Length: 231
Image (cartoon, rainbow, N blue to C red; front, side):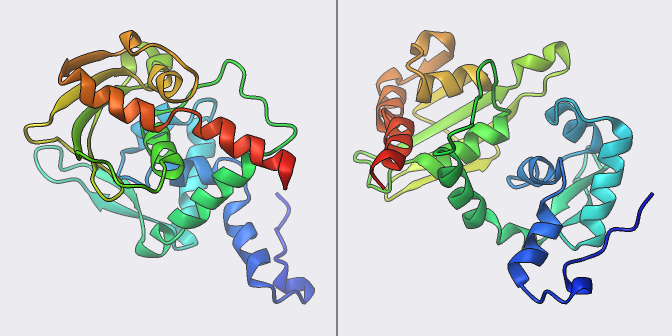
């Protein structure tokens, strides 16, 4: 296997070039994305990264560990198993990734026909695309999302969504939420961005609160992509 030479080995001291060396390999960003909201076991990562082989994932995770972006952790009881988590340094990439996502929406060659998003991916998309405005009255909702594309092996992840001054979503259970939204993560993507009806999800509790959340995302993707035509 050929040895990769760094830009620095060619005399280039640019720190952005080094950043692209760390992040530019295939599967690197999706792996980091799937750890941004919390640790995951190897099997969870493999399920989330559709198309990756166990050997490639093993190699990529080891490279991320060597680079200081990912670390091994032990999940609390009763799981008490080994998992992977991003480091504090890697967590600083969050606003960088959000800016890249908004930038990539203007790509003239982007085609996502027939594609979907994992639970963590749509949650991070929501955090990226949400209008920077106050929600009055505030929202406190629970999201229970699974990637239906993987069939019976799909893991359902729970999130607590709060929106007062701005949108906040964290992995974990919500206590006494106004409403709970349960279903497929790609279907939820369609509700927020593609005009799907809320009936593709299971909603319990205050449906009006969920409708206010969905209304906040109405047109945000179209506005982001349309801006490319006027810039």
